[in-house]
Length: 518
View 1: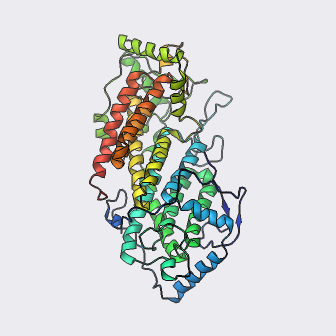
View 2: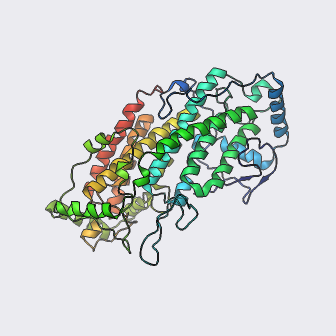
């Protein structure tokens, strides 16, 4: 994970952070070599007409008309931009270069870095119980959140959707007001960022910073300072680069923050607050499995850890109803006492005792465990390259991440509903001779989360980038097999997870086909 933290000497909320001094514990900005600045292949000027996901319409949040570019107030703003450009420092130029690779892409990187930082399971206390991360005490022990795969999948979806909704609304008002950028009004102002093909008001950079920052601060409250500084940095870059004036930025920031309020309201009522369940629920899952004559899953952590988010299967999905989630639940796994299961256990034992360099490389490549950006983040990383190479506009890049992450959110919900419905034991629980070659997740086996996430992601990315279909499918199969090779899943977990993921991804693709963006 890269550390992009740059501290800007400013009031954290103010957008009027011009070319005054910068402070930083590390004054170099690590530009990701895989992200290069580009001019969008299309401005997607009609994006304000694309279907909304949370807002009722692209105009449901009012944005007042800007002042005329001939007004004294606007001319003063232009003078401030010129003054800022005349005093640009090396650090400020580096900030502009960093954000020139695309705001949506950069925020996705920042987001993945936060997930990795907070993807740490709580350690046991002296009494052999486990503390629960507390959103009201995010700096406590353990820190809030524990950004495990379901939490991360949900978080990726909400931030991506907020940015997408906010940018569609911004594109609507850009077409209504059509105010030019500062460098287009005054030729003495340089344009230091790629051409976008859209007007300046409201600023898309400020819209992104407002929406992403407010969502991330809610999801990662212990990282508020880091997130706030990043958001201010993006807005500063837009002004320093001659892309936006202070009023372009203030309008965009207000719009982005207003969209975040509505998306956070949806998140507040989606069922996540009760996803951890309680002891009575956990005990009931054991009783239910044993009543069917099955061996129930048991935590193999020492001391035994409560299962990870057993009620996440009841969290509200984006493109599937609760009835559709149940209707598309995979068929049962082989009974734990059956010959078929015995054969599957023996296959896992074989892989645990006969590892090869090639298989071990696959296990490590797809481990995505504690301290990483999780399997959903892995697929965001894959998507990044394709979005950049396709030279998507900011709004189309936001759509790509929104579709991908809504689908993987739904995959998390559907997979967890399946896992805790069947409550199937891990291979090493049935045969202690099996030694895992990667971290053993603390939840039931059937179906494989990696397989479900990966097939879902491959389905959506194949829709977005059909030229990559073969590669996406290969990566999904490899991610799936990595769990068998690592001796933490049976073959049926993997195969049924892949099949389930394709179905889940299909719901998102079917909705995308009629959203107006094609």
